[in-house]
Image (spheres, rainbow, N blue to C red):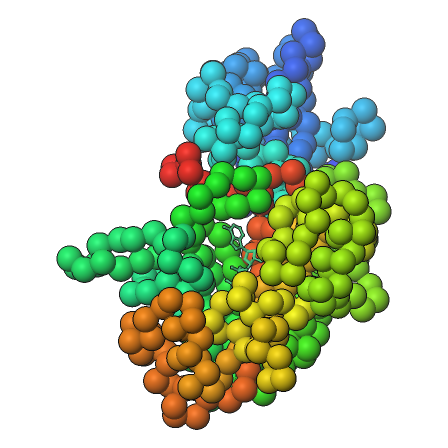
Length: 433
Ligand code: AMO
């Protein structure tokens, strides 16, 4: 194939070859237009029937929409063309003809429901506004990685096939591992903690997690992507600082580098969070929720926050905020409790007004207290021996947290359904594509 030029780079006076998808063919009689689409944009190709080779016109105008073609020809300025330029084709090559009937209309003129879109994700992703979500997701991950590197954090990759769960036994996916029972990992929690004791001290991971969630909701997935962070020699307050810094870095990068994508998604006032995020204790949070009068039943100390409670508080606070000092009994075994008040933990959540984005906390690094915590949660410390025993050989005080990437994107872009932020979502009904 001749050297290919992106449609956006085709300038008047150039002789180029462009390649992409047939977006539309408009036949006006003596003259016809083919709109060719590629990653960079679209270009109008003009066919003058009486003046051009018959075969060329035939090829260009009879090709089905969404076929892949390449066009070689002259680029000319044309005010009436959508992009101000058009091409006069010297040759058209059909590289792969598409079926006449498509399961989904990538031009977006005909709406499709989410399920049809996800069944045909390849075609769905030919729409610029759908692509924009994934360009933004990629930019968020780049910015987050850069931020972590700037604070001396090492990227790690930990096993996804494991022998035990970490976030409560009910949400595990069992698999068979050479005749033995194993599980898909719910979180890199224990591995990242082991790494802060390894000499790497400060680590992060971006990777998949697997949870057999009971409910099919607009904000739960059965396979999600988590951004995990863990650092030696910091406490939960400092961990919250890093968490806040990461979130702001992600928003700022999107505001700066994704203006086109934000335009496509209809944002003219994309706001990056600024100022310090409020840090409410759990007790303050339930008082504020009760004071909104939004809930049918008042919350009492020890209750977890329902979706309605989170929403009531989110509306009240109006921006990102942390909830700190959770009751120990509703936080996992690895979270440390206050020395002077063992009923209160140093666990925290970062909340967006719509939902929880992050959980984290100061970790229990003392062997004795850690093993006790396992027993209190009805877990067998023996099963976690590979983890607990390292706490006997020099485990520094440490803290960390984890984001759900899809929830971050969903709340950043105001998406209604978390599935919009995943290429191929896994939920209770969906195992393929
Ligand atoms: P937690 O279970 O709260 O904490 O998970 C952390 C964050 O991950 C996201 N998340 C999910 N997103 C989509 N679908 C799901 N099923 C799902 N489950 C979780 C949420 C959530 O806030 N090990 C701890 C973190 C830590 O303490 O470092 C953990 O996994 O945004």
